Amino acid sequence: DAKTTQPPSMDCAEGRAANLPCNHSTISGNEYVYWYRQIHSQGPQYIIHGLKNNETNEMASLIITEDRKSSTLILPHATLRDTAVYYCSRQSNAGKSTFGDGTTLTVKP
Amino acid sequence: EAEVAQSPRYKITEKSQAVAFWCDPISGHATLYWYRQILGQGPELLVQFQDESVVDDSQLPKDRFSAERLKGVDSTLKIQPAELGDSAMYLCASSFGTAGTEAFFGQGTRLTVV
Image (tube, rainbow over the protein chains, first blue to last red):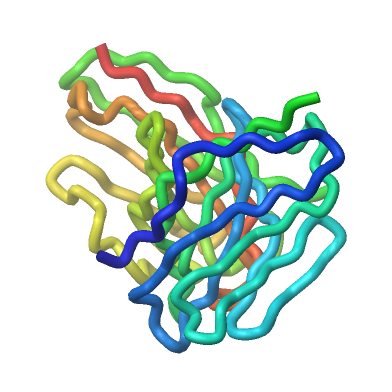
């Protein structure tokens, strides 16, 4: 199955790191891993993407395993505003993205 | 900041009626996507355009859905006739390129078929 697999929900304490896993065991060698988040009633918002190497930007870090079968999105210091649904997706060379069903992250005070 | 514009935000229609959604991508973005998102699930690609050409419409139910991007800028997605199972969020996204580029999503159109 080309879908990605994510846990349905996770909790995180405010100020702590949130680590969101994603399984994409059938990913092809030229497919990118993307992460988006979605707040209720809005469109998904891009967070980060990578191919083989780990990536970091101002929002998050992306750790991709060496065999590329899984990845982890890290929010280093979660805030209440990071409460959202986080989607992992795989993107083909042609740009087609295949999304999983997402992880609902709840950041608690 | 440039945004992907979609209208309407909400649409209620009766089954068997026709409905249309409009999307205006970010200026200069050649790639445009229409996704359908059922409540509790991730977005599913319906159709992808590169300029005015369809690149992928393998998941588009062509007996009732159609999409066009005549001048390679804005796009329209149509459903005729609408069915109860079409109730979902319809999302438009655009990107400058394809692989390895960021896709920007609009706010979506929430369709309810009654």
